[in-house]
Length: 96
Image 1 (tube, helix red, strand yellow):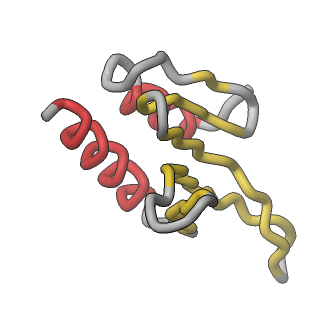
Image 2 (image 1 turned 180 degrees about the vertical axis):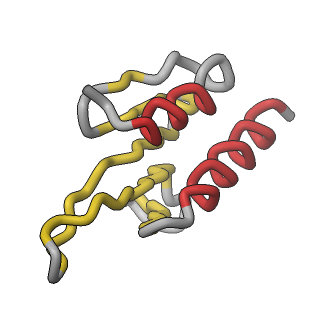
């Protein structure tokens, strides 16, 4: 079962991009448009007291300066609003 935060991510992405987000136990993935995708993944990071859940947002888009891809990543331990703010910002860009 997906975490509460990944369910929040899915809700934040719902109806704002080209496709509906796909949610699994550890990843929420969406096609923003024909050239851009975003995914938020659950990561289990070892700590002194066991494993700590954190999230990684990958925002993949074409790199027009080279033949490859460029991407932006956000890795947060407890500042989940950074990921949600980025999703909202991309949704605003797409809506324009």
